[in-house]
Image (cartoon, rainbow, N blue to C red; front, side):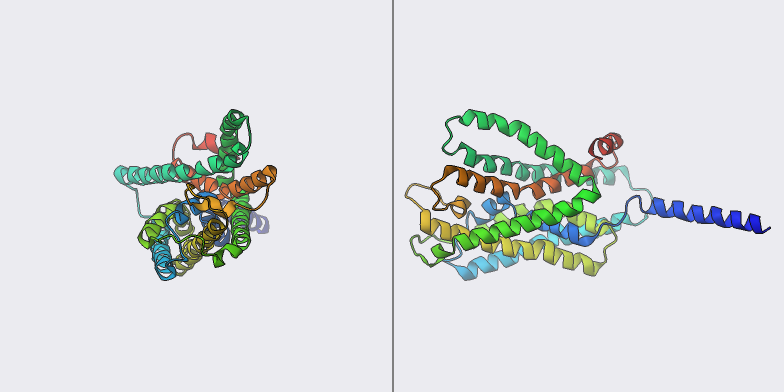
Length: 327
């Protein structure tokens, strides 16, 4: 009888272990790495270009601050809180989902992936602008972008589908982008006291420029909600990963652009975030390294874009093939 009882206990224990393994097949991801990956979208070169194009905070600090605050709050609600609440609802067992609803969700994911990828591809061209500068063989660098984009896309897809790598890459991209942007702000600090240029700030345009930049983060909010996060966790992750990240990135990037333009602007040149990357260096190679480093800040955006695609094809027939390829 003791042997039978011991065998029964072993069977129950093995069943419990099996159920635990089944439950951990799609484990709840830690929130901090996901928040960092979400914030890395705003600490990327494509985001800085879009956010700062209509902004000139030195001419209207109050209007700029109001536009950034309103955009940060709106983006947090629409691109984090609402998707997270939908993700939490989708994770609950509520019976069979209708085919129409399933296809609507897939259409939303595919649409988000398209918009996210359109932003992610920008950083490839931005990073290669430096190599085109002062280089007679421009066509060679133009051809080099094709395999480079393929390599980045493959790497981003692999990282997005592997939780083990998604954690360090999110934290690394966020930290690198933030430190790089702080460095640009410090480098152009001297130009903030100059009054070389008087440009009209456009708070309304700044508000509308920020919202599309925040759109890719909706998939991270969806995953946070689906991981079982509480309402309180959803709000504080949105406040850090979206609202605070927007406020910090927009402020540092805009003032870095203003300082760089005041120091280095020449007539007939359009004013954009490029001036935040202009230095007094005469060495072309040093400028190329700076632009290449700036381009690397967009890698987090590529991972987020690949995450959109991973969600969009989560239940398709070639999911198994994709998981085998990407590990």
